[in-house]
Figure 1 (cartoon, rainbow, N blue to C red):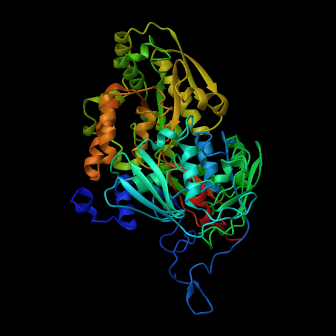
Figure 2 (figure 1 turned 180 degrees about the horizontal axis):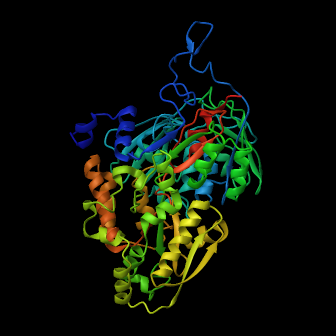
Figure 3 (figure 1 turned 90 degrees about the vertical axis):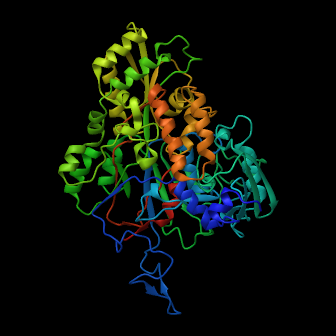
Length: 588
């Protein structure tokens, strides 16, 4: 083979492990994770590795059993804040759909989940795939695990997964009107070679393709019966993942049982999961306190109180790489709106006190006084949780546009006047029924800053599923909005969504310079060069404030776990049901 970058860097043939190392290098962040009340290497919450561990029970052959101390069985009790927009993974691009699909449907790869590792510093590992290999980074051969089975539910009835199922899923993902088709716009073709071999061709070489295979925004592998009339994927779920859907009662609960035929045997350790739908934070907090939920997200102001109430509760704190942002209706919706002038958008940014929003959302001072490690970073259009892939807006590297992140009401007023704002009423939208108390507080406070800065705002909350996601999030509105951006598992995923051809490009931003840099970062294999392209995109956004980064998601988020929960790990993206769920066990 003619010598090229791939052969010089990774050898004439990229092995599975080599590819994974490259993906981790190209996409992993360096965000900090905090542990409270947790041990080190001998932490009892850690899931043992497949090799022998100290204290493990011996098998009859005398070989240490790495799972000998794990208690199997029981029902893990979790919760979500709403029904999903759809239970069909190709029926909606909403995070609510992707998260529930992760229980049942497999991907080729998944994000590695380790109890002692920050989820933004790890790469991908095999899920339904046995390997992914390439010689040039552009043409890939993916091998399925032989013997992998779908759930034993009619009409699929536990048959083997084959490449025909992959092709059928690919066709559904890329069909006209599919809400996620643009997520795989760089995949030019996918075709079966034999029952276990799939060729995937890309528009150009990629050092992050394996991580893309783990992205829940992209290809879930469904049985072909989901598409030929065998069953309706909008009303039932049959996959090959670790959990089998037993029942779904709208607005009440999902019930899943352990898949005994999952390739990951002896995982999962629990018999099933009950995933209750609890919209109100006060209710989920009460249920967690009462022991009716095994884990729950806890707002920062409740962490100290709960620690005092029950010192045996286990805690994980994570900077989640979650971007909140203010955005503006696109020119096609509002051609004469004042926010089409970049001076107005910069003024909106400069009306915002980011330090105060961080304190409001994340109780920074009190937690620091209690000795906890909490983040005080600012989000950029790549959120702070992505470590040095995110360009610190307060750093010299941001350049002259760093001034537009500063809280400066005087300059904001001058920019408003220069943009010609005359006090006309502007509607400000945000969803208040989905993301939780911290998001709602920050969204409301952000609107108050804009009002104090001189904008005549009419604040309107929206129902996420009925209004916000299908309309406002997709750019079909007139005004200003505040929302979260999907935390993509690969850092380059943000650009197609916010600046590319994705139908959820919220403000229909198509900046030629960003488009050029996006194309470059997609194919760049040198991590430092790629980081430079990604930083450049953040500078351009800062110079124009197409999207105004905000602080919900920029602080340390806390999850509390009941004392009996073991095998605690965290992930990024929405695949936690496959990546974390099988590790949990209950020490009761």
